[in-house]
Image (cartoon, rainbow, N blue to C red; front, side, top):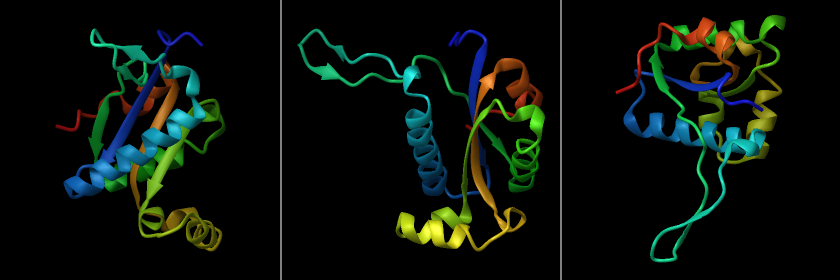
Length: 140
């Protein structure tokens, strides 16, 4: 994959408390690493000989938006023209579960329109990612 033509961003709900913002980004990042293992670089030894695990080989801008904007972007991502993108979302339902089995059981019982998204991560062709996120500011 030519990462010069690809882009990956995270959009986080700017109204969340700092702890939930950090948790949302961490969970989406772990899922992206599983889905796109080829973007993680090789382990590297420092001058002292200590090994540090490889990290992602390119920047991932972290953007901010309202929960309504994130919801609208997530809804667009279900459209056929965006099917080639890798999308990870994290919702209030997921955050409220103590186990993955609980998450599975609850998710199977709700419709998408009832979810409040805390964040969404999007990876794929730069042009498509920019169409959806190009005007969003960085989370600072």
